[in-house]
Image (cartoon, rainbow, N blue to C red):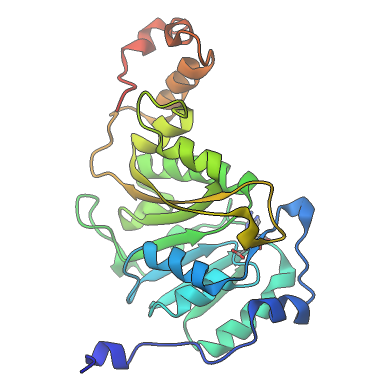
Length: 277
Ligand code: SAM
């Protein structure tokens, strides 16, 4: 017999498909904004399922667009979903989802690069850094030109334990161009090992969970897409300020495929830092 938790699980009522929503609200993707939508709800369900157990979680979705991932998150029995979308054309479609999930979806028309999520969720969610991660999750499929600067900004937030990490070791599930996902997760000695690998891995446990072929998106991007999961580490692998690590790593990698001591030699006192996590 199903437990009471299962019986009380929230499900969205039947709704128009994402394709119909796109038609209804005239949401043709703006190519110059690199908008590529996921219409297959089995794929959006997979992204959300792999993000972890979202029961009673507070979730921050960045760039919801027509709302495919948004629907999957709402069906995961979350306490609250906050979405931040820059393009106003998507707001009415998201409002429709909010009406279908009363009290669960908060919509902000704004920019994820400046939005202050640290003020958005209840204080009671905060955990000590050493504790298990809080029940706060970040999920998003953003344009590639936004996801890379955003993860660099958030990695700095991890190192300072501020921004989304004011709640503790908030977990993130984000999409990147496959090549960037491979760089984020590349091991020492791998050809893809790069600045991003070190910056991400000295602060987080980073996993390339799966790859979504380009043809799953509408319109189809030039490249495949990697879905990457980040859990901040209790103990960073390098105990130095973020900006210093960034500078050393930048120098070390500026003569890629040559000898990294040429780059490090420019600032000899920095070369004492361990770059190999
Ligand atoms: N998440 C949806 C999906 O998977 O179908 C849409 C993906 S589309 C690649 C990226 C979305 O992020 C678009 O809706 C776009 O308007 C939004 N977006 C782009 N830059 C943004 C920013 N700086 N802040 C908030 N949303 C942004």
